[in-house]
Each structure stands twice: as C-alpha cells, then as structure tokens.
Length: 265
Image (cartoon, rainbow, N blue to C red; front, top):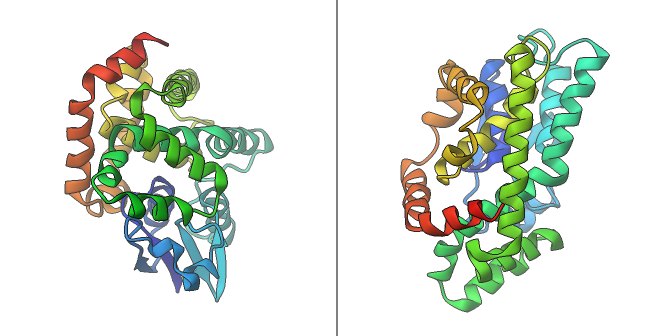
C-alpha cells in the first residue's frame, strides 16, 4: 500500500491528496506537524532530503516533489480514471502550467502566506526558536523567504512582487478557462489539481477577492471543483478549521496593508 507523508495545510500535499481521492486509491497516512519541525527529523530526511511534504513511499521507494508525484501516480495507476491527457500538446500544456508553479508561484504563495499570517505565529515565539526554525530549512532560498517575510511583512517589496505575480497568474488561468472550461483541453486534469490549493490559499489569505473581479471563469472553475466529492475528502474533511480561521483573522487584521500593496501594483 502507498504511504503518504502528509500535512493538512501544505499546498503541495493538498494537490496529491486531491489526485489520490479522485483516483480512489488506498493509502496509509503519516501526519507531519510542520510547525513542530517533523519534516526536519533525520529519519524523514532520509526519505525526503528537501525536508518538505509530501512524500509518497511505494514498495519501499520514496517519491518526492508534488508535481512528479502527480505524474508518477498517473503513470502507475492507468486502470483508474485518468486525469492526464494522451495528446502531446495537452501534456506539454500541463507541464508548462506546472512549471510556472515550481519555478515561481510556489515561492510566491509562501511569501504571501508568511507575510499575512504565518509570521505572526513565529513572532509570538522566542527569538531563538524563530532562528532555529529558519536554520533547519534545507533550502537556502526558502530560508531567505521566511527570514524576509517575518522581518518585513506586507510592506516589503517581495510581498508586492509576489502579489503581482499571482494577479498575473490568475488572469492567465482566466484566459485558459475561457477556451475550454478547464486549464488544459476539455477535461479536468492534474493541471487543475495543481492550481486548486493555491487558489484556495489566496482565498484564505483574503487576497482572492481582489484578484477575480474580472475573472468569472476562475470563480466558476473553483466552485465546480469544490463541489466534487474528492475536494471534500482532500480539503474540507481534512484541514484543521482553526488554521483557516487564523489565516482569515490575520487577513482582516492586515486589510489596510493588503489594499495598500494592491494599490501599488
């Protein structure tokens, strides 16, 4: 049986849970508390040297990186409903959209999440615990993102840049959706699953409402996905509601700073 090293609030883990549920696969879950630093445990690092979730272990072999996990599951479990098109052009379209997440948008959502909400959790801790949390992050780029977002918050240039990048990305999604109703081709695919967690996160951060004024396709798209049974199984029934409420409260507290940042775009 597949083993999934998971966290309820990780965007990368959410997209993998979504596909697992859509394909109705069976798996065993190992929950990692990211705030407690479970992802930095030496035993876990032997599975995933990057110290992030998710990781899937299949027949003793660890599979890492959420984009690659989605492709792995599609290629291995072909007898289940497929969410990966057969045509080369559509497959290229999916990889292109996923590449934008992997090379830029994932880091951008981290900047937004830390700046609006997560920084407040860490600031409430003692300084040495904050430094220890950052130093244990294996990726130096992510170390810099955490450090800068904690120190500067929403008034930083990286926050504004990341907000601009996601504004442009949402508009790009709208352009895709105007063509066929789904991000690639005429069927629900792993391209859609790859973006759902980020759109949901933008909503929890109080940012999505500002980005979809002229994007009715995105609003309809996310609503239709949220009505699928797999969404409830991967998101609604799993995510700690207190975490969502915390993000939403932080967004309300930062409303003026958010509007100021948006006005500067």
